[in-house]
Image 1 (spheres, rainbow, N blue to C red):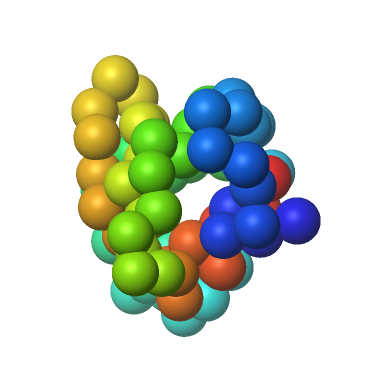
Image 2: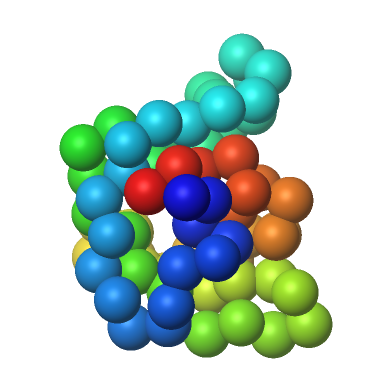
Length: 69
C-alpha cells in the first residue's frame, strides 16, 4: 500500500519506490530506500512528516503515494 495510507506511529518497511527516475533519485537522497524503515509522525493538510533514517522529513501526499510499504 502507499505510505500515504499508513497509520501514524506505525513502522513500515519500504517495498518499492515508483515515479520518474528523477523522483526516485530525490526520494533516495532523502533516505527513502527499498528495505529501509519509515514511520509517519504526523499528517498536516495532506502533507506528511515522516521518520526515515533517524531524521524527520516533510513530504507531500503525492510523494508519499509513490512510496510503497
